[in-house]
Amino acid sequence: MKQGLFMALVIVLTLAIAIAIFSYVLGDPSNFKDGAKREEPNNLMGMVYTGGIIVPILISLTLINVTIVFERLFSLKKAGGKGSTPKFLKNVGGLIEERKVDEAIEACDGQQGSLANVIRSGLERYKIVVGDSKMEAEKQIAEVQRAIEEATMLETPLLERNLIVLSTVASIATMFGLLGTVIGMIRAFRAMAKAGAPDAIGLAIGISEALINTAGGLVAAILGIVFYNYFVNKVDAFTYMIDEASYSMVQMLGLKK
Image (cartoon, rainbow, N blue to C red):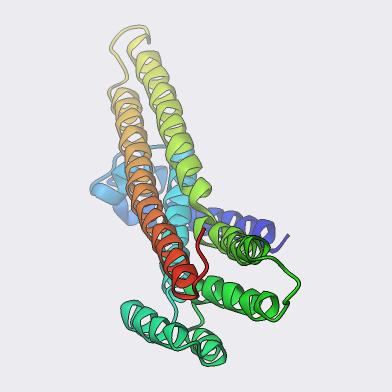
């Protein structure tokens, strides 16, 4: 629910900002030779304005990309926890080898990262099962492994959150760019089809609209694809590290898979 509300707010705010930029920044009369008529741009901002109604949508999609990128950078930094991860693993590993389970759990609480949460879940379950003399070794192994897997399943969605948004924006940005291109070409051909001399201004605006939307769609798509792949690789590396650390923890506790 919170995630849906967050994305709804992002979409509404970015669209409002995009419309404001389009109307009052790009559409400022000073960006055009003919002033308020806004048909003959004299700079890049005026040229972008001639891209038409699709431009605010493309600006909004780009702003959504930027928002998600910053949100993911902050979230992954938070998931990494406090301090150096290798140092944390070395410290916890030493405590586990000495069977100082309570101290290892306290170290996990202090680290406050996703990896620490998974290790802590395994250690807490270990404390429970190791004191049960009636439980067979195989069941103890299964219980510790199940606790680790459950904790990993809870942490993974947090690491992957909003990545689908980047992928979706990259896809639809290209589609909107093509839509704007088609609209611009229709306007250009309409200007050429006029009886007598072609409408030079209309032809120029149509071609400009087509090219601006193509460029805008590609910018938003490239931004989304690059950061989507970057974050996917980061999440894959992080989950691999969690798996390796969890396996090592089980081995150090003397429980073999």
